[in-house]
Length: 116
Image (cartoon, rainbow, N blue to C red; front, side, top):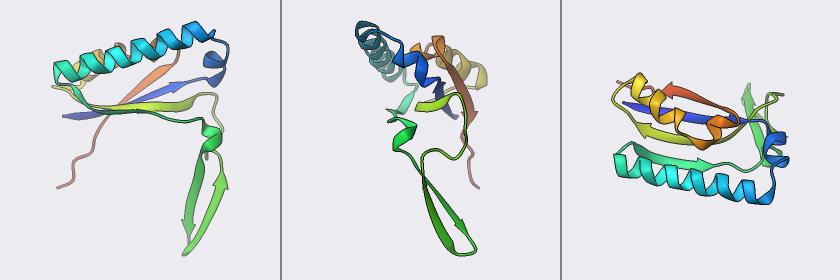
């Protein structure tokens, strides 16, 4: 089964980190991605740019509106995602718990919906 692991964290947490701490977090994250590839869990992973770079698109009654930034005002922001293959939810939770940013934020694990 496929699961999406959404990586959520408060931007202020990263802003307070020293340069060396950020580099270590990046290295640890890339190393964990490599481990997931080796174990056969990894499908795809991406880090996202700041929510400040986001655009929110809505279509209502055929009219398109575009606004700057994220739709919801939240303290935590989606910082990235890892799409994994796991045997079951327990396996997906185990994989998500190993994501380095889980120590600083939270990881939302959600099964991918299969059509048909």
